[in-house]
Length: 418
Image (cartoon, rainbow, N blue to C red):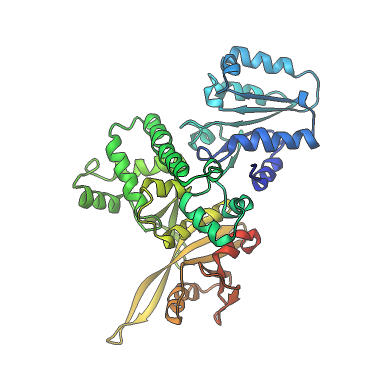
């Protein structure tokens, strides 16, 4: 069964022949190689060129082992370029190529060559590769399957699909597996043997136990406002240990996890003061199945899971996503005015577009609706404000002009927020 990834294919096609190295990044097993060597290659063959003008090499294949030597690879590619038409060079697991940076720079100097690469060791799971080729690289960040992509192959109703998706996530190999046992074993092994080991090896982390304990603490609090100091305090109280005496090590560990695309960070923004607040952030997992595997499929709190899924969806639609802080003035029991801070889950910006979004798992009564609406009402601008609920409801507007919609409508219709 093939899972279509038209969104990413179209984004890749827009980058064609732009004079830059196209680097497909993303967490392991999200489908980078398949995007390049199946969807993109097939499009080229059907619409652009012929087989002789596509040079593809998977460096992890035994038959291509000799091409890991740049002294063999570079002359080979040069010999394959026989005319002035455009040649498309597709390189997979390019980190296995010795001196690959020098080779890529050399290929860029050939006028009729368009280069696309992907890789899946710690170096290519990091944003460092983009920094190293600054100004010469066009990155395509690829995520696991969205809920809409997942439902395109699930073959049952959306409510059953949601239950499966929020449990096992959207990594394509997992989605295509038949049994729960296969999915669970794959996700646990992938997290432990691939992601963690890659990060530890890349950054030479000496104490694997403490690094993993920090991941466990982070996993238990997805969507909670935190920072290195709060995590250090939690670590001490729960583990009776201290990471490094100060929070510097924790901050490094968090950066490593973000750079490897295992988690991503949403920063607090003060809308009134129009400034970022560098004190507390929220961390979300790139794939919810990996998160669940890390906590051994226990503590499954669907309200936090839904918030994580919405966050990932917003990123996949190209939004910059922050956590919004709104100051409210309220009257206490004694009649005094007090100022309180209220949180908007997500403020989403893309060009001139902005949306404010609250994730509310359930709104059983008017009091809950009032609670979820309060911070949105007090923002004070005219941008669209949305509350996303788990219930299957028709989209409707409240008297205050807030759009309430089902998570299914939000996720399955890309035009719901675009």
